[in-house]
Length: 152
Image (tube, rainbow, N blue to C red; front, side, top):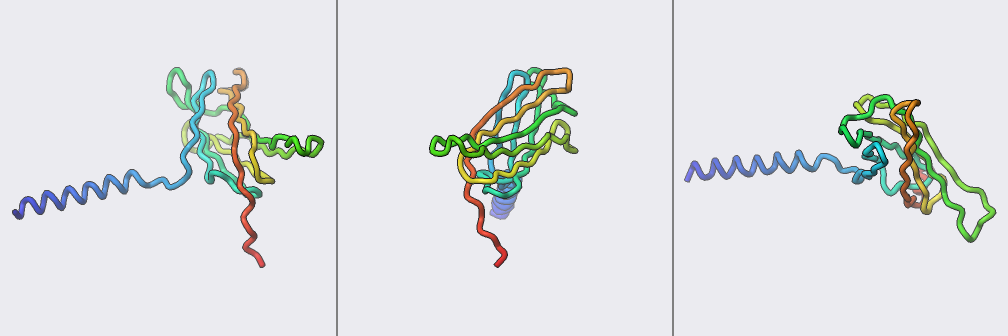
C-alpha cells in the first residue's frame, strides 16, 4: 500500500511538471505563413491589436528547403487600411517598420502602430540578402478600438 502511494505521488508530481512545461506561453497563437523560399512564424505581442498602441512582432524566418534559419536577411513589415467604399477619396492610413535582426538566430523584430480600428491589410517583404529577390506574404488583420486613456 505504501509503495502504491509513492508511485501515485510521483505520477501526480510528473503530471504537474508536464502541465507547467506546456502552459508557459500565454500570448496569442503565432501566424504561420509560406512564401516561395521561406517559412515564417509571426508572433505579435497582442492579437487582435488595439488602435494607437505599438504592437511588437517577432518573426522567425526559415529556409523552406533546408529548414535552416535565415541570418541577417533584409525586409519590411507594413500595413495599410484599405479605402472604404463609403469614403473613396479619404486618406489611407499606413504603418511600416524595417526588420531588425534579433539576438535569436533567424529571428527579426518590427513594430507597427495601427492608428484606427477596422480591418487592415498587412504584408511582409523579405530577402535572404540584397542579392536575392524580395518575397512577399500578405494577410488581413482586425484592429480593435483604442483602449480608454488611464489619465484623468
